[in-house]
Image 1: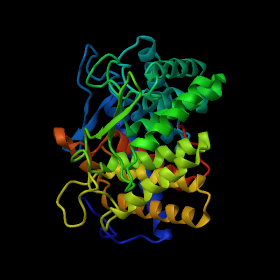
Image 2 (image 1 turned 90 degrees about the horizontal axis):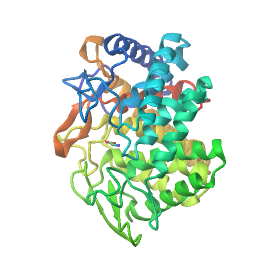
Image 3 (image 1 turned 180 degrees about the vertical axis):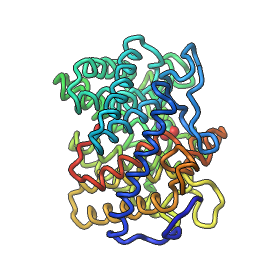
Image 4 (image 1 turned 90 degrees about the vertical axis):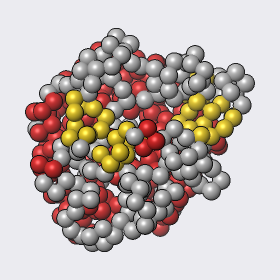
Amino acid sequence: MTSTSPAPGTRATPADQRIAADDAITAALSRIRRNIATFGGAYPDDTTVDDRYQVRPAEGGIPVGGNRGWTTSFRTGMLWLAWEFTGDAAYRDAALVDAADFERRVRAEEDLDTHDLGFLYTLSTVAAWRLVDDEDARQASLLAADHLMRRFLEPAGIIQAWGDLSDPAQRGRTIIDSLMNMPLLTWAHEQTGEGRFADAVARHTAQLREHILREDDSTFHTFYWDAETGEPLRGATEQGAFDESCWARGQAWGIYGFAMNYAVTGDERLLDASRRCTEYFLRHLPADEVPFWDLVYTDGSDAPRDSSAAAIAVCGLLELAKVETDAARAAEWTARAHAMLASLIANYTPATPEDSDALILHSVYDLPKGNGVDEGTLWGDYFYLEALMRVARPTWRKYW
Ligand code: GLY
């Protein structure tokens, strides 16, 4: 790992964290500015290769650098955060170019067969609406929410994760990441008053709480329902070590996603689910607070870390602390989030600007498929910057 100080496992004091956060924000913003110059309107790929982002390859009729897949909006989200940090119009203008492209994508119905419409449209067009009142962006966000609703399966009461709804391999399958896609539907409910959006959020999150969270407080990555009868069938993994293991990023999505959906549904079982995901995650961290890519690995393992899971967990813990009804627990979630962020800053950022164009190093996309192992990732970078925003400006209003 590229390391400055303190050494891995050393917890920074609160004063150290404040200083490190300021320096970390400056370093992150200079990388984002450089990436604007490098990529312009073209999108980088999901992960770095040897710590450098490449332009997104062509696929499925979408040209090189085009807006496809589930991760392009993390670049847009970083641009919005950079604008909020600095007030520099160059970041806002670049974010608006992306938002217009997301509007084009949904109107052209390009690469929309995914529940990740939530990730894609929350950080691009919903953020544009929230931050600069862009009416075209609002309309595009509502269209995306409508598309997401087409994936709601009755009688199971779940939103199918991946692929065409008629694909037998994907039919009735959910994944824990989907909790982060619900805010698009919550936002659509707030905008339109249509109960179908809120009903889908309440039912989908309750089903995941019931079936994707296991008795020992770990989570399955994916879970299948019988799409015809609605019967819950079985848990499995796609990106974890094995079906019964606990994929680190999935557990982090659970911390953040259950907390956010508790806040909007008021369903106490979701608060409990977020706490349980948190406790399991924290119990399985190595000494330097950044998890291995799957929580079956612990101190002494030479398995790769997933720094993106830590960045998501920091944001999730800070969100959980906000909605937590028990003050002592809220203080604990905040302290652990700060310790994890301090380790990310000290141990997982590039030591020099030349080392990488990612904000944080040492993430894993999909180890079983050998995809993006020990690399920077667009989502790791986004959640790291969101974590810095949450710490530097505690009154910041999230895009989710
Ligand atoms: N949402 C896909 C992932 O976390 O890799």
